[in-house]
Image (cartoon, rainbow, N blue to C red; front, top):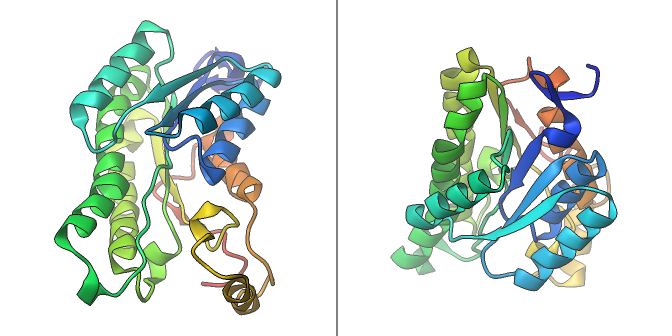
Length: 255
């Protein structure tokens, strides 16, 4: 593909925005794109130090990097973020909707506020970012939107009803938007990981982690780099015929 990240655009001029780019999976995704010398935007909400650490690693890899803070639940903040990116020549050709919020507990004990918060970050945030950043992709007739979902959005999980419902919504959103944007040269796909060794599993005791690993045919949890490699592949120009797909790297756990 002659090193092109878009129509006549070298990889070094391709910009990637990763929401929740300071976390375990998000940081790995950002660093994977940075290793290809793409321009990367690390979005975060409160994790300023973690975002700066990810940015430092990207700069060491020789990539141009920018950090931005915004609450994904607030459209006005996202619009200001978009204006800042445009002013700095960092409008995203690739959007990775990675930021997410989990909740563990019985549905009977779930408050309306907790439900709304999970939905606002996981589903509304994906909607708002896609709506705000896709016009630029449509205008150049090239772009990639990759939504980081979850295996629980496919199968559902006991005691994670809100999280499962939000990610199921992300999956349906992905399929529908893919149909809508395909004529404009923009693909929309979702990566739905199984259990990944990140801080999101910190609420589990070591024996619970071992039990989880025993349930997975691969016998282990995924590493963030394994998820980031799939996201990177879906973002490449040669992946342009993959569209509207929910791909679940889960070690054979859910088939």
